[in-house]
Length: 196
Image 1 (spheres, helix red, strand yellow):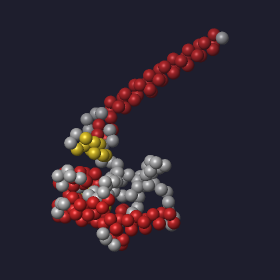
Image 2 (cartoon, helix red, strand yellow):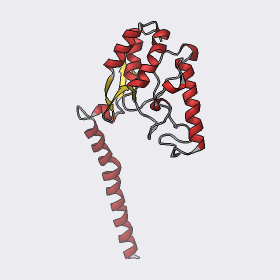
Image 3 (cartoon, helix red, strand yellow):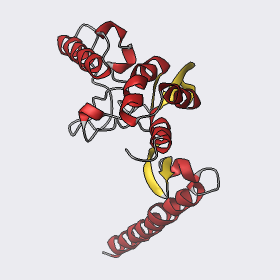
Image 4 (cartoon, rainbow, N blue to C red):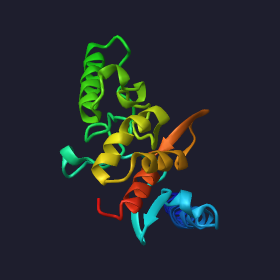
């Protein structure tokens, strides 16, 4: 009986020590390190703010949903397979998968109609989802394709919209220039007077 009591007390002491170390001190240390100047933005999700309010994340692309699809003033991200059943990730469908081929054809037709172009003018990143489904950037070709619609629906001159595209173009496309959609949409909103 004496051995059982000793082992129980030893186990409880270990439990208390590990709970304090791993349940309180370690999380506090990680939190403190994450809030070192220069790291805080990344630790908090790289939140982009405008007028003191969160507008989105610079690392996560979320396709804007227009209130009126006929007057859509936004640049759109790549399509996503993200949904309630798949919060993030790829569809894992191969290029010969009939469902994927049909989905790409449907997306191509939808985007061609939205942008008033022929389907063969729609760039590949406009119709294919990324590995994560949350890419924040699109190709310059896809941004250029959307420029005329955005200009028409915001009242901005097309040249001004193209300037905004150029200002938001970087090497975000893994060695290929890419356009980060959230800052571009915020710049369009500001240039249009915040009406959208």
